[in-house]
Image 1: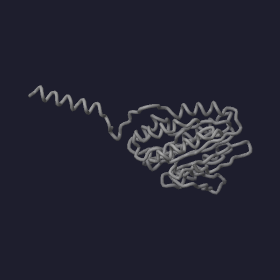
Image 2: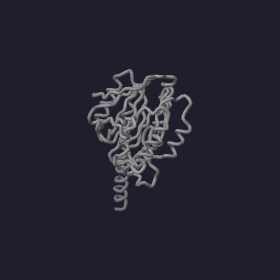
Image 3: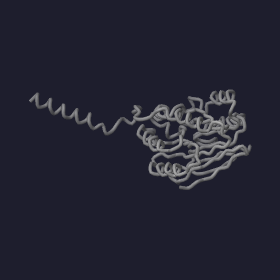
Image 4: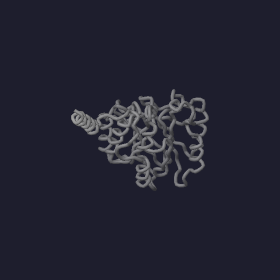
Length: 267
């Protein structure tokens, strides 16, 4: 009898071990590539070095819309005039590891490098920890041609205001250490000022701070799920908000020596 019970117990353990169909929702063990942003930033900077004209696409809020994200990748890959892609956050709906990994694996099919910002849904559960493992720091910057891109975590509500969001120390370091080869600036975020996610106690100070960057061209954001182009502070700095991917559009920006233009592209 003891021998029979031992066999049954061993069979159950073997079955459970072999299946491993589900994992704990807070599991932060990553399958597949990590450090994605750093590797892609190196590719962007190398490919765009010395360029005076760059063109890039913006996508955003791809959470749960996997088929639409795949369609966006195919549409961007069908072109040969895009240097890189910026995803302005919300890959996940619930901050689960599987969501991040699925989105990363789809985006890795892009023929051009991409970077991803942290969205508010990406912060849920252990999402921020998973994001930093797969993609990297939540505040980062890179240079493409003569344009400096300053990418920020602006999801203050998700941090309960116990962490400085946006990170003004990071902004000051970026201003003080502005690279010699860069001449213009684009500021990128998930949630724009005056949204419910932003710490609107510092909205005006934030705007005053980013306007200290050399030749601030415009700002980019996601979160709202609907295209918008707004001069939020009546100072000439336009905030471009990208549709969520379910609307099957992306924004295409071209920055030249003379200025910039943009297009809302349907696919």
